[in-house]
Length: 110
Image (cartoon, rainbow, N blue to C red):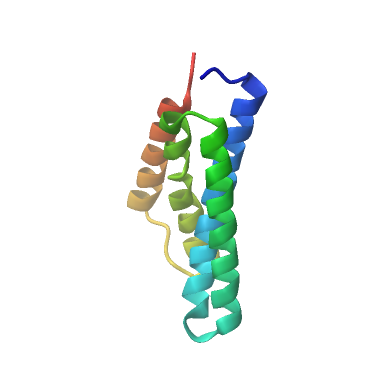
């Protein structure tokens, strides 16, 4: 099935949004361990992420869209550093760079 370029770009944007919402939902779950408000917010973010993921799959090839979900690792690393006080090491930064390179290579089309 052939899709137009704009429709496909929308699919990639939907998956990046899904990755962001998934990581955000997990951050809220971390905070919500003893707080039901954050737990509920986490479920809402995670559910919205699933919605955007489904929209992405409807608009983009699976082999292009699915690797973009790995961007949730990047968002989680940023959340860990900025909001949870977890240290950012060279190993973690290198891993994120490798993930980004892999996502770029698998999502790039000629």
